[in-house]
Amino acid sequence: MSETSSASSPFPPNDGKSEGIDAQDGNSIIPISLNEEISPNLLQKMVHNALVWCSLHGLVVGDKNNQRSGKVPGVGIVHAPIALLPMSFSQSHFRQACELAPIFNELVDRVSLDGNFLQDSLSRTKKVDAFTSRLLDIHSKMLETNKKEEIRLGLHRSDYMLDAQSQDILQIELNTISCSFPGLSCLVSELHRHLLSHYGGDLKLDSTRVPENMASTRYADALAKAWKEYNNARAVIMIVVQTEERNMYDQHWLCSILKEKYPFYLCAKTLAEIATEGKLQPDGTLLINDQLVAVIYFRAGYTPNDYPSELEWSARLLMEQSTAIKCPSISYHLAGTKKIQQELAKPNVLERFLDDNDDVMKIRKCFAGLWSLDDSNIMKDVMESPELFVLKPQREGGGNNIYGDDVKQTLLKLQKEGSEELAAYILMQRIFPTESPAFLVQGGILHEEHVIAELGIYGAYLRNKEKVIVNEQCGYLTRTKVSSSNEGGVVAGFAVLDSVYLT
Image 1 (cartoon, rainbow, N blue to C red):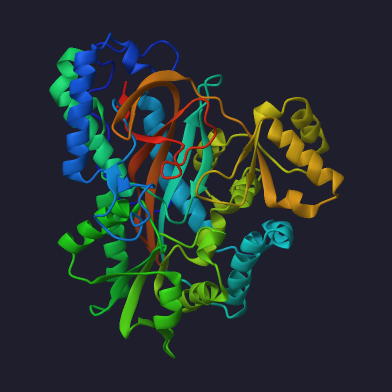
Image 2 (image 1 turned 45 degrees about the vertical axis):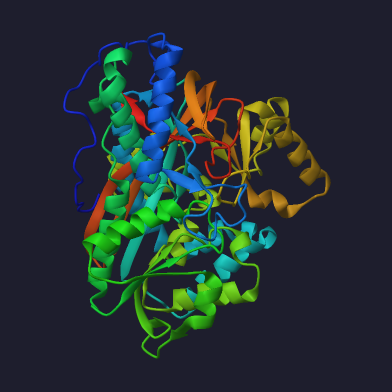
C-alpha cells in the first residue's frame, strides 16, 4: 500500500468486555435491549431526552409530508429516524472494517486509471442501461482527449454486514459518489454517548464504548486539503446539489465545518444552474458566475433522476472537461459501480491493481459471492433457492434491489424475452446478519422491533501526481433496519440511523 496519513483511533482505550455484555457467545451483534429489563418509565425519559437533543443539535431531516421541506431550510424539520441505543458490535470486526478503508481507497484510485478496464467491464451494461451509457460516453471523451486528473480526491464509503453463519463481515457495496450522512452519523454517535452518560448506570453500559465519530470533520479536512493543492486563493469549493433534498442538513453540517475552519468560499449549485452559469476558460479552468472553481463535491448526479434533460448532462461534461478537482471524477464514479464490484471479485483481478498480497487477501476475504448471469450453474441454484440471492441494478440511493421470489421471476422474464437486459444486473449472495431486538424512534414514537445492522466505513483519499496526501478511514455510519425490510436507505424510509457499542 502507498503512504497514508493516519487518523486517530476510533476505538475505546480498553479492550475486552464491558460490564453487562457477554462478548463470547460467537456473535458480533448482541441485543443490548435484552441485557437488562428496561422499565417503561426509564424508556419514556430516554426518548424525551433523545428528541430534545436531536432538536437542539441538528440531528434532523426534512419532513416528507411538507412539500417545502426539501427546498427551504428551516421549514418542515423533523428529528432523523434513530435507534435509541447503539448496536453492539465486536471490536475485532469493527477494526477489520476500518483497516480495509485505506486499501479500498487505493484500489479505487488504481482502477480509475485503467480506462480500458472500465470501458470493457461495462461494455455490455452500456448496451442496456442508458444512464451507465451516458457516463461511459463522458469517460470515453476524456480518454480520447487524454485528459489527466493529476489531483484526485475520493470521499468513499464501504458498507458491510456481518454474516451470521460465517461470522465474517461481508461487503455490500462500495460508494464513490455522494456518500450520505457524514454529518448526521457523527451526531448519532454523540447522542448515544450522551444518553449512556446519563442512563448508563441503570443500563449497565459504558458511554466510552461508543467510538468517537469524526466523519464530517475529516471529510471537510480532505476537501480543504484538495482546495489547497489546487493552489489558487481566489477559487471556491462548489457542491453539486439536487433541486430538492430532504437530507440537506447532513450537507449543511459539512458546509458549516468548512466555513468555520477555512478561509475559502463555498457555493451550492444544481446541475441545471451549472449548465447555465458555468464557463470553461481556454486553460481549462471552470468559472461559475465568474468565480473560479477549485473543487467540485458531488451530492447529486448519482441517479438518472438528476438528469431530466440534456442541460444536466452538458453540466456533467463541462465539469469533467475542466481542471477543477472532481469528487468524484467520472473515472472514480464508474469505479464504484456494481458491475466493477463484480469484476473485481473474479480470480486474479485484484492482483492487477494491488501490489501487496496481504491487501489482496484482506479485500478478497470481505467479498460476498458475486456472479455473472452468464453462469449456467449459478442460474440453476438461483431458480432452486432465489431467497439466497440479491439481484442488483446499476443504481444508487436505496429501493432498487430485487429479493426473494422476485429474483426468480425477474430472471425468468428476461430470459424468456431473450433480453440483453441481464447485463444491467449483478447477482450477489444475500447476507443474513444476526437479528436482535432494538428500540427505534421515528416521528417521536418508540417502536421495539427485531432488526439487522449495516456498518459503513467512510474513507478519504487525496493524491497529487505521485504524492499521496490523504489516505485514511474517516468515521462510520450504522444503519439499522427492521429485519423484514430488504432495503437500507434512511431518507427513503427503510432504516434508522444508529451507532455501534464496541464489545
